[in-house]
Length: 299
Image (cartoon, one colour):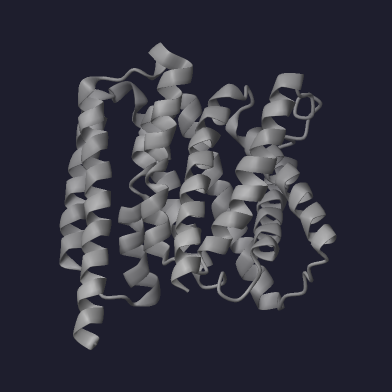
């Protein structure tokens, strides 16, 4: 079991690095957020279905579970919509810094949804995270809309992680991913039909965009999505969300290397982002220490 936990933790770090690159792809692809997410999810469903057929995996699930997966698919679709829109209206650094508040939202959602006890130091750390966000808001006034979108995306990501934790111990990752991403495609397609969004331009992709989308859908979505659901079998929702908060570090470094000047921010931005990241990491360390102390007392 310990070996499985270690493998899952290392795999999670690799997935998080891939997700850091996802933000870069979001900036490289010229499509707006809605068509970008629709294409990403649609292509990912195709890749996952091919995997399921090759592995001969049974897709039968109860209707109640199917509805839950479809709802989770709506959440992940909205998460990606707000995530990529935030990148489009601000930049990679701002979006990823705000996305790191996901662990803070998780610490709030777990007690609300699962009745877990509210921990005093998590409330304190939450206030520190808000202070970090306040600094970012003050120095990056041109990106306020992007910051709000990124924070919304962080909340939706945390909600998705908490909800999914219940099912990862029961169903195969590929099955969960297939239904959730299919649900996301279905909801987005209904919306696009409603607004007459399926135009000739919608399906007219440049070769460059198509190449980036295939990479985004295959490696950064189909593979990473199945693998991330798999690690949730062995790791707690908080551990998953905490590790995901390393995504800004990977992503911001990659963005600075690739986009250079457009990603250079006010020095106080990095102070605010640093406060958020350090708070989240410290929260995780304390949480782990508390768990070890509890286990020792039980022994």
